[in-house]
Length: 82
Image (cartoon, rainbow, N blue to C red):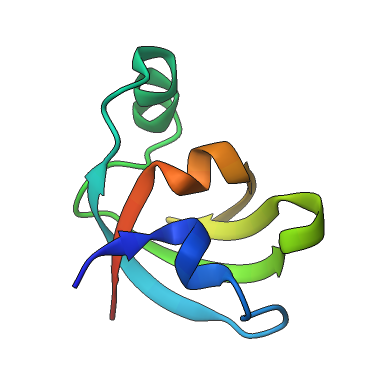
């Protein structure tokens, strides 16, 4: 069952996991454009490398490139774990 990336990451600080993006929140047009610019689109595999819930930030890898994602963005990405 798909869940928001931010919710899947809670409680996983220091533990990596792999997932696939299955849906994006569409209520924020600017954020939706950012997702596409960053390659965060449905069908894309992502790996969680680090979760820092207190700071509202995740580190993920997409196509081998690591990037930081804020909680607002992570709440708009729905994933299914691999």
